[in-house]
Length: 338
Image (cartoon, rainbow, N blue to C red; front, side, top):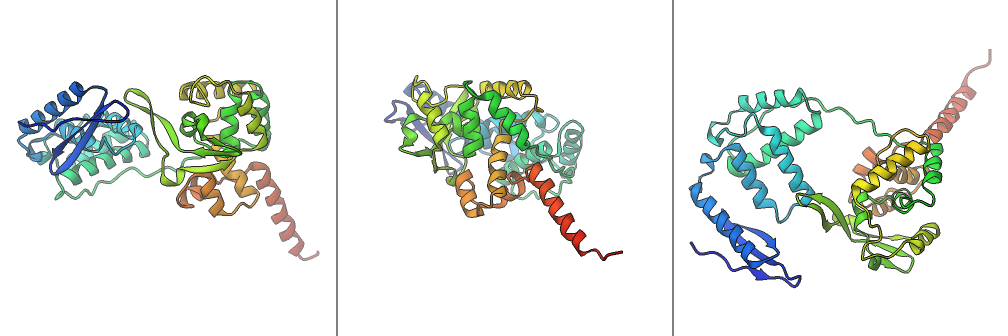
């Protein structure tokens, strides 16, 4: 069994690629020996399976699918797939050739008892992708639980003021202001480096996400996620006061930011919000002041306005009351006199 030769990268790591079903599967390792060991194990596993997808169980097929995509998927996506696999316990030992629509439907029905419709849909989606790869002749006709529209919470103007007041002077002020003022995702905030500052421009180039082995650096979520943003004067002052202890601008973990923000919400007397809800604030603010969609999409890092309109642009409560009153006053002016 001849194995490919690992190649040393400029970073010092070793990359090796193995041909699996006509597709190249690659991984990067710290040492040449680890790369060769992984390739040998993968080749052995392929030979043991006799190259026949029909002899694989659902669990083995999911593992093989994840492995084949690991070099192109986000580390957080790979981690999510592996967590989703654990929800397939009812069918994980079934061979692909014995898998029927009825078995899949029963698995979905059982899963729906303890999990949200979104979780069920994600698990079924992974199974569907695996079957498309290794049993393409099988067409799924599964009935999934009805989706429930998530009621996304967004702080009111008063709650935003309370949060910004409470965080002032704390180490959480900078990440909170980057989310509120610039609409950055938490992963983008964690990925910021000092070299990303160019005069009055902050360039969003990368993100830090949670992978199997902890925080992992990757590119932005989408092509449009790579974007330049103007630095407001207040954030410039925060950056100038930020201690420089390495390449990262914000030297915290995602868990630390989440916990700190939760405490700030509690101290300021506002309900619990997710850190990501601060991004909703930014998008809704752009809607409130009449920023065109094209500019809003560029600023928040979206390729289309679909997500912007359906998820992020929520009406700020005070504005909703103001507009309601204007509508009522107008209709009232049309009412005939007694």
